[in-house]
Amino acid sequence: MTAPAQPALAVESVGLQIGGARILADVSFSVPAGEMVGVIGPNGAGKTTLFNLISGVLKPTAGSIAINGQDVTGVPVHRRAKAGLGRTFQTSSLFPGLTVLENVRLCAQARLGGSFSVLRFPGAGDAATRTARENIEEVGLTAKSSVAAGDLSHGDKRKVEIAMLLAGDPALILLDEPMAGVASGDVPALSAIIRRMHRDRGCTVMMVEHHMDVVLGLVDRVAVMHHGSLLAIDTPDAVMADPTVQSAYLGEPV
Image (cartoon, rainbow, N blue to C red; front, side):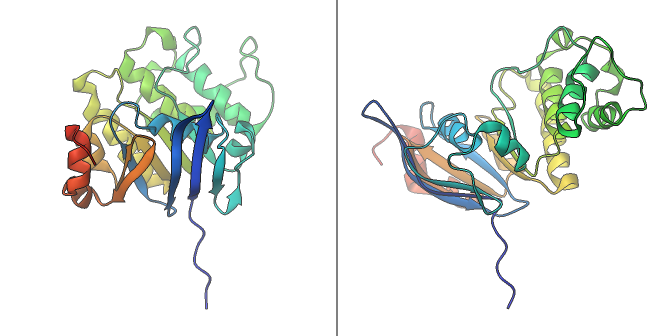
């Protein structure tokens, strides 16, 4: 009999306590390969803390985290990246003085190896540049490849961050509030890029997002965080119909 496939992400009884304060408590769930999961919850619920634990920015004080069957609980950020993890952050991580192409190429170079110098930029034929151009095309910014990142709209900056993420060819992607600060008119295009990325690459995606229409329109399952605990994880319809979840969002006792 064939053994069941390892989940792309397994979080088991994870907790975080800092100076006697309980930040996260006994969080357990798994994400099968190729699934997209939205993470929602009120401000301060523990959503970004959970991402920081998964990505290695913080180390849990309890429990374990595995990526594709590999225990990464005590593994530093760069080794998790080598294990196939990629992440965007709430705030911009771009180099504003570099062009779109230069920003994305640096990430491609980190995966492919070689010099990081932007003073001697290689020709169009080198592998990192080709990869960067392909990733930029994926997010629809080819016409802005030579524009300085600092001169872009917030929506276009988010697209560059996704292109930089794709340059690392991750299998597990964490998107931390990708719509934060994005003009409402740019949200549909950015949502379409995330949907296409997930479909075409077959990657596993977890996304923290406050735009509920975006979450419900994209994901396979929704995880609800509340006061540092996992309140529910299920299909969007099931979660939205859950009285406990409704109470949490209305601010009533749960």
